[in-house]
Amino acid sequence: MDSSKIREEFLRFFEKRGHKIVPSSSLLPSDPSVLFTTAGMQQFKPYFLGEKSPYGNKAASCQKCFRTSDIEEVGDERHLTFFEMLGNFSFGGYGKEEAIKLAKEFLDSINIKIDYVTVFAGDQDVPKDEESAEIWEGLGFSEKKGTLKFCGREDNFWGPTGEEGPCGPTTEIYSQGIEIWNLVFNQFYCHKNKSLTKLETFGVDTGMGFERLAKVSQNVPTIFETDLFSTILKEIPGTDEKARRIIADHIKAAVFLISEGIIPSNVERGYILRRILRRAIRYGNVLPPTSHNLIDLAGKVVEMYKDVYPELKSSEANILDVIQKEEEKFEKTLGEGLKQFGKGLDAFELYTTYGFPIELTLELAKEKGIKIDVEGFNKKFKEHQEISRAGAEKKFKGGLADAGEKTVKYHTANHLLLAALRQILGPEIYQKGSNITAERLRFDFNYPQKLNEEQIGKIENLVNQRIKDDIAIEMIEMSKDEALKIAKISFDPAKYGETVKVYKIGDFSIELCGGPHVQRTGELGHFKITKEESSGAGIRRLRAVLE
Image 1 (cartoon, rainbow, N blue to C red):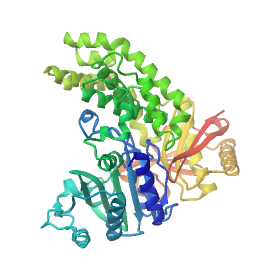
Image 2 (cartoon, helix red, strand yellow):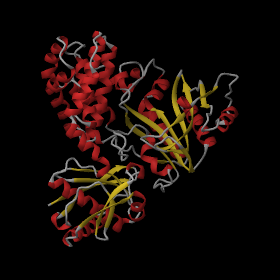
Image 3 (cartoon, helix red, strand yellow):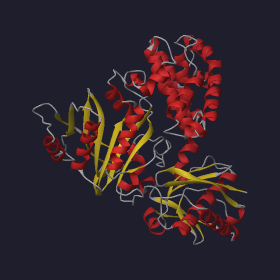
């Protein structure tokens, strides 16, 4: 069965069984503690914690995901950076029995034979999952036949995504020797200190690697022989399979990252994009000179996925432009950099002069049996990146890019915007993320539907009225416990110290914040919302400027 048919069959199966089909959320998550969306459940995280779901209590999706942890492993038979995850989710809608039976029924419907299943064996914190074992036994699986196995926490306990969140025991399904589906039973909340408390609502969160399912369904040796890769790989002739696979995976990942507005840089998400693009370029050099063209390959990726992810087609020109510029930039220095590497040039100089990510230098060194002074590199890198890192560390203080005069104004406007949203849309509005520069502010918040023009107008008018009122901004230091009695916060209280700063804008806005702010709202100018869009399931994003 071809991959597009498999994807369609999965979604149709769960839709017929009362699940709301939810589009993939962005690769840029609203959770500020993680760089990328790594699992299908991330956009549904609030609903496992008791927030009312706009989709009802059952949902299913095909989620685009990106994981940085496997970059070095890409090139073997199974690791990827970009992949899709099929999943069905329940927020109190059903329990273990229905989840397990649905999984078995779907796999039967597309003629996938289950080799064996695994169940959580229990430990000192969480008991053995006898219930799941009994359900599987009722479906014909058993320890005696070798089709039911008990495994420990490392294999059969999942979560949380990010620093904390829902988690629980899992049951995993194996076919043709590989794990294809992981059914997670979100029974607990894992706190930052790793302690567990029981969740009020029993949650089901399943994740099935789409590429792995395609491999099993199409009965091919590896994921790279599926139709999800064959179209790209046939454009990359050569005998070095590792290089071909790296290029195919990395160009696919780059296309999706750029479609999200990421551009190559030396910090955070931009650094990851730069790293995979330059790794693809470098591995292209071990293949025949005419065997690959990143621009053409990127076009193939867009063509493959345009019907499922239309944002690729709409941003194709930008995607190709970004790749071409990065390729031209790196190709100019790659040859010289490789020459200097051969002469033993310091890793940090390779990074600053030739744009070699340290991971690329380490990879080259490993191939040549050379030892690199990683500690020395990290020390120099830390000094070099001090300003950039300082900006990144302010994520929980409002997402400021710097502390310049204009940025500070936008930071204060950010507070006014949140207060206005709560007044116009309801008190349950919380900040889900923000990014503030000297040119604009970007603000994410929880809301189940698109804002209409009337709502946007009311929000703008309210903010501008408070600016016109020229209210003094007051900062008070107090204990965190006192502050939590008078201010709402969008992040976990544990992210704040015991003594906190509270910024008050009259009676309109009271927020915990690290600052800085202007002295009076009258300094801000005219506030205008320039764009309203989705940033994920149940999350809206506003962009605004001060004129």
